Image (cartoon, rainbow over all chains, first blue to last red; front, side, top):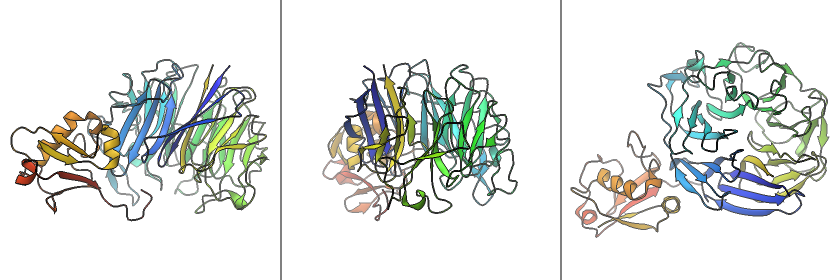
Length: 371
Length: 101
């Protein structure tokens, strides 16, 4: 029988939630790395017991961990992320040039085929890769040194490369999303990159449809349809049907087109999930109601999913890496809140239950489906 | 033997207790002690000082003999009491002041 493992990163440690395919009873293990901010924990699709975790702390910097036994034991691995060559500058909040400075690893994306190969998206925005199970990390500098790099400027959350998507039909093709620069695509395994933001409009930048400068919060792809990507931008939910060559808006009837998360149902490539958030400064769910919105038509028509979710006096946020789906049928959907709840649905989002309610603020949720 | 007191987060990372004892060859300086500490506990590389520049991480402090030695030059000899192992070199995280940390 299949198993599901939910890897949860929080402000104060990591937790691993496990269940069988029924997804009714959950075992909660943790905190791992107690007291540390865990931006992301992710597992290798090629070896699900191989996990990687990014630990970060304002006091102690970046630490990386690897597990070979599904998180029962962990060992520290390489934490040196040195930009290639002389890094130069990007643009600071006041428009002045500012040196690139490594701050933390936001996102880990293991190779689809090799458990020892992992990509890391970092702040200040750059892409690193390991091929020796995270002992050493080398930058793929083609992204940061792409011609628009010096103009990238951080948003309030920092200049972070927070999302990496690998095309399963063409592993040379990757998408990287950077706040607040936009989406970039490589077709040669990271050697060269180009901005792919045509169709995005962002009123917080002087030229609303500029080539870069868009605060993309998250992108998602269904593996069976790699030409289609969905995006939650700072404002606007967007879709592309041509490998990000052009984007169009699909916000439709959402109560707020601001949010952080977006993901796709494992069995229905046109079923998409978002969690609208009130912005600009509030950053909690609208009207005190925690609602996941689902579109079964690839966007524009959205329905609120509320069964089992608090519908009054709720003022949590759901951060960009904190929603994920499993590979079962019906599809499981999972998300974590800044209030420390991790909610799960085992029926495509129709109904929800909290697996845990009182964790530290959740930064990331990743799901492994183990045959 | 030199004694170094570690903050809780680093104890967990090193798999050590609060107080660790180290052999340090030659003059006992901040740099020599940290070199010996990182050699003994590689998991601490980069967590006390930058792995490349070797600069102290800004929110950590080094105290000994009731003095703040955080900003002394890394090759300055540490007090005799530390060099003799009579007093520990204390590594502390700065107080969060009620912040999220």
